[in-house]
Image (cartoon, rainbow, N blue to C red):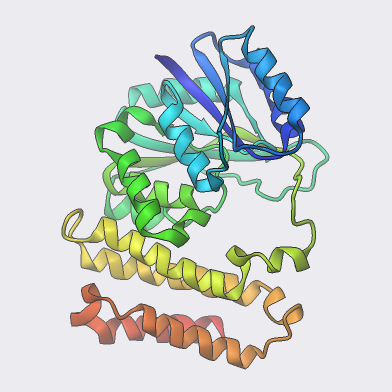
Length: 334
């Protein structure tokens, strides 16, 4: 078994994936691996062929081409299933792992084997306009209430997190992750955030000021605000579906079969409402590009949140939950 896997889920961006391989491969240890998971790409095939060619002469590099497109969530799941290591870092094909820093991070994680994941800081390539760059502080939260309350929903970005695969296996998290993707369909848009929720519910989690990932130049299929707003995941309806998806993810870990903590579920639902009201409020595409009446959006959002709160777990404290929705809604729409 390898000590560490850098997993690169990729689709139709062979030049990006190849560039990452060429830069990263000379920097990794002999007992590390780079796993490139090609989601049945239809373009950039020459670059993917070059990756495969390199993998035949360097055993640290593995190239896997899926026979069909598994979608993003399926490729993330494949990263977890197919890597052969104690620790795993998932990196977008446009970004870069920072092996020199990761080496020290792994030494730290070996000293704290009950830490399920570490989210490190992200820097940007020199001269690039940052998009996902983040400077974190060193912090450690116990599993359950603190890890879920302080860590979940704090980042939408997948690159850079280091997972302790041994703990994922020990707590059967990969199987739970796969089952959840099937039972909560909309969670597939942000599978890594769902994975983080599952990990935080049973493992310690931490953040680090050390830069474990370098953000690369974006190569997007949706270069404009208009085209991005037309994607279901970023539409008004898509955002609302995500509220339901994460609500159900929190119900899963806070329910009687797991933490049995209704107070935590209420708190997390409040955080969920705040996050998505903020996203919907700041997404100018909702009215700029769609010419929707903002008053209608407010009314629709409020009614949706009330409807989404009618779940069995909230039945005895429905008034309290509605009060939270009222306060959060009014605060953001003053």
